[in-house]
Amino acid sequence: MVKWNKLILFVLVTVLIFGITLFNGVEKAKEITLGLDLQGGFEILYQAVATTDTELTNENLQNTVAAIDERINRLGVAEPSIDIEANHRIRVQLAGIENQDEARAIIGTTAKLEFVTEDGQVVMTGHDLRSNAKYVPDEINRPTVSISFKEPSLFAEVTRVNKGKVIAIMLDGDVISAPVVNDVIINGDAVITGMESIAEANRLALLLNSGALPLELQEINSTSVGATLGQIALEKGVYAVMIGAIIIVLYMMLYYRVPGVVAVISLVAYIYLIINLFVIMEFTLTLPGIAAIILGIGMAVDANIITYERVKEEIRNGKTILSSVLTGSKKSLSTILDANITTILAAAILFIFGTGPIKGFALTLIVSIVVSLLTAVLLSRWLLVLLAQSNFFKKTELFGAKGGELK
Image (tube, rainbow, N blue to C red):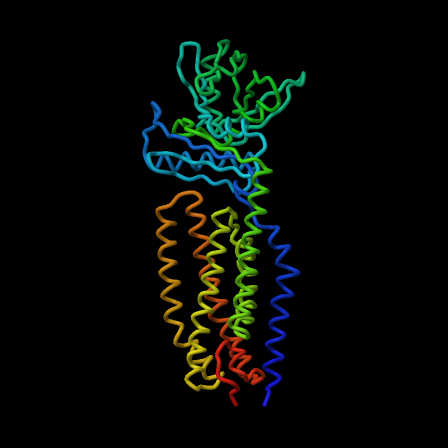
């Protein structure tokens, strides 16, 4: 006797999964941040070098990365990738950046600011500044940068001692302004002049606010990816996912029949969950990430295949469809877990020891496998049990096994 409530519940869940994916999944996919290789941009590989004041240590490397990140954030670049590599190298990837020369100048400038007296004495440095420097035009609209000091009393003493003298303001050894101290400045506020354009003034303000780099950066090489090439890569990546998914759908439905349909439903749920996790966790999608998603699809389908082969084996042994589904799912679970856990361990090793795109691939693969376990094991099993309990499909051929009809 057909249990219609089980069958109706299966249909409702299926419609819900496809409906949400169709109407919400597409919009969510547009919110995913694309990486350098998919939307264009450029990357620079730097060699970190010790300075006269700073040793080349891991702590200073981390501080340099933090300063670079601060500068990039002020530059307005979304989702930058900054990684420390072997031999004290730092790789910076900026997706969607337009003015590469400006970004390169801001990232690599040491920004060592010094206030030097006429006799060559450094009386103050950039460490004495507050991080509120900004561009302001003077009375005749020339670009200047306003700054303020953390200790106004210290600046007041410096200006008192050097009243009537020149205090040169030097950035990375170059004089950018050489004002004469006319009065003692007691409020800790000053203005840097000598910029030729508003853009130069804004750049100086950005550098002063983000602080000096602890280490010197020497550019080793750079790679540029045009927006057009990135768009082509994205289209090909999506195309590859679609072709792979279509082939898998056709194979599962033709070979496994009813269980194949269940696998397709769970696969749609898997794709929807992956899209939402990318948005929620603010992942950056790259070509290696797309490869990891495709591999995750393969792992999800593989889990279904292992289960369905077990179910077919139980059906051939004369068990009912419901009993075969329950027993086959139970027997296949350990094999599925072993296969997925070993893959997660391999991905974890890649994430720990890899850099850049390799880390992204590994992290995406781990997330994909976890989601595939939820959909291919839990969701797929539950849907298949619903169909078996409905008693609507009695022919064993509909489950990919020969043998006629079960009562």
